[in-house]
Image 1 (cartoon, rainbow, N blue to C red):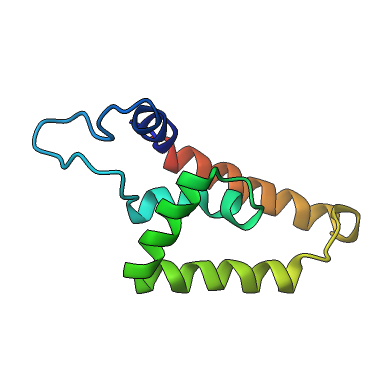
Image 2 (image 1 turned 135 degrees about the vertical axis):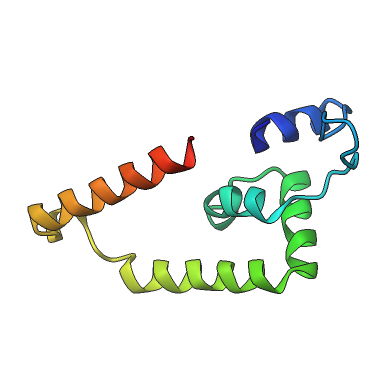
Length: 106
């Protein structure tokens, strides 16, 4: 089940987990937080999702560090426009992203 499916189930008052033996909890996992970090930074999460996100951060030093790394990365490269990149570098970045996506979706 994807995090979007899980959040949708929670919003409808259904358990966030459907596998037997898993906790019935609205808490986010570290993986779910990673998937939501962009929406969080852009202010695109619902109030409930933002609260769950921040509750996870309160108890997870690793995810707090990840969030700060993402903020630092955005500050460092946020001003780089696509036109500023060498076409070969742009293609290398796109290849790396495609490779990451294909491994993640397996």
